[in-house]
Length: 82
Image 1 (cartoon, rainbow, N blue to C red):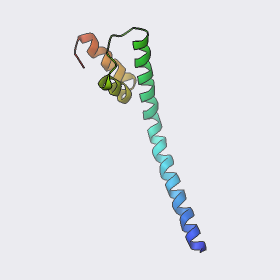
Image 2: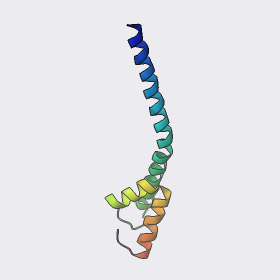
Image 3: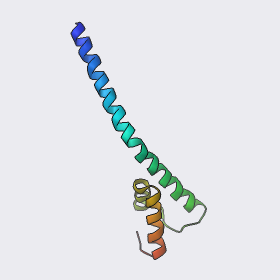
Image 4: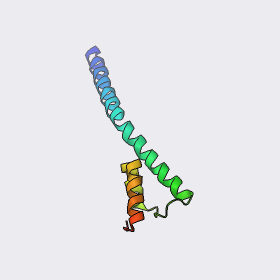
């Protein structure tokens, strides 16, 4: 019975280490996306841009972060519809 407990403990430690590694790599991407969407929303809220907030522009801002917002602004300024 002790071997089963030790095996369960070892598997739990391996799973926890794998989750920590994945979340450590994923956190900067999530923060970048949050900042991008927040900046895009603030610019739209204060009327500084005229880009429509729809699924495509939201995804560009979320995936690209600040650079995604700049891409949306550039495309809107050039008159290229999204």
